[in-house]
Length: 101
Image 1 (spheres, rainbow, N blue to C red):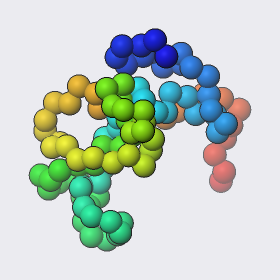
Image 2: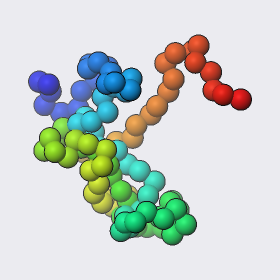
Image 3: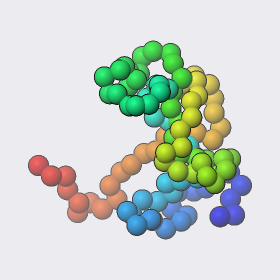
Image 4: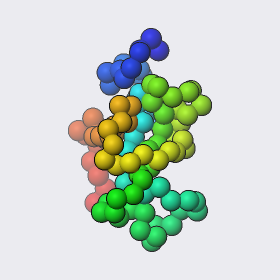
């Protein structure tokens, strides 16, 4: 794409689901602690308090193309600075779309 590090949001068009810049810009922090599969919501992995390794998903500009996918999963210490990991903020861009009541 010509970028050497992260790129401005909106540089590339949306995919078939209307999502933009989903893969390959920055990997994303998740709430989950690094635990083996199978996933269980009741095993404490989503408790934000414990000092545990946390899951980072997706690939960044620094990763190989095969890791630029949502199922890519790795562990990082939550307190460690990581230069290619961030947060995804999702907001509705179309004010005419209203949530169901």
